[in-house]
Image (cartoon, rainbow, N blue to C red; front, side, top):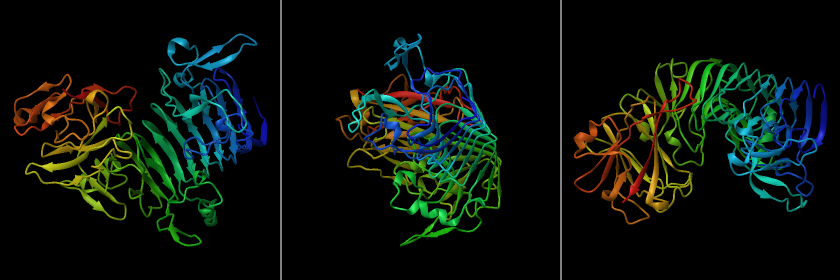
Length: 533
């Protein structure tokens, strides 16, 4: 498929439909004006879906159902959804015979013979997306429950669900991708470690939006270039346009999301040194482009920035004051390896929440951050009910029992809450209360840290909320039970201790090397089960 033009069309443009289309050469093509089709006429949900607008909105100028294709030197312009959408299903059973019946979605590996989500990328580079809602996305696939379009009565479609790209035996490299004027996101990626090199992100609501270990190297991010007209901000405040297609807040280079992303030799250009405002019909709104911002995430790992440069010096290099729906967003962290962002080599950038303030931290009100010199780990709780809704209250205490506390939602299940960050120090400990347990009276506990062998601070559980279980009845499976707090402080492996007043105290060892992780990112993980006996 070489040198073709697809203009002013409804639904997907260049369309690899089934998922077993491989080894195709799709190069030097141009797609312009991919439009959403009316639901009453649509065959697929992805022809018109609005949400999530910054991850995988439909339609796509290039819909790619299998990564084993050669897709280079193509351009997508003016899509009302995505420019390029990598929609990789997990398991397919395909009839490979000529004139066969195509592919069907199946439930497990034994039934399948095609595995797009685990397949290596053949080639995807040198592509351009401009003036789209989202430029290029790796996420979202019709891999959910079978659905029928209630308006058009079309059948054979499946609900769009998250699609974590995990090619076996490959760290894919995507070179020389350009995304310009993406209303919501330039590139969105959900998956295992990958590398973006020589990329250009410019004039977009969000340049890069990454879930997990993605690396941007030898690339440039442009806040507001000379090609951006100030009046273009008006698009983002036009209420006649769906909110899913607009970004009515500060433009941002990269979001601190799940992590751990890595910026390596990335230049931020044209992020204004003065504040930028836009006058709407009723308000003056700050739109100052900012290289690094914060958003809520289902998981948290420490991100890393190294060899990062700025020209001019932005009004803010980092801003962690944006509102978001995750109650535990204070747990975010970015490691400034060489001090390119903060001027403090080896420092950690944290949201400006007192839970993060510790000896030697410096607060910056304009940026809403603390810059600190300590190591950070993350503890994630999963009660097996709803992964993004876990209730607990957490307090950080010093040896005398004083310290800040974070009261999430003591009256019920937390909304977008499942984790807390820990400062790796023997001088503090953490207390949990009102902890909600799930199926079989247990909770999965995860702890991530920099290196195998790292120990968490002491964590105490004071109370359980939804079942009759005094903390003294808790046990951490396959952990060592100790006889004193002194032994727990000295522990070098996952251990617990029941205090004299009935609290459950424990420490976690990050004892497992994470696989397929870049060397700059947190390397170690612990996973265990906390159970009420």
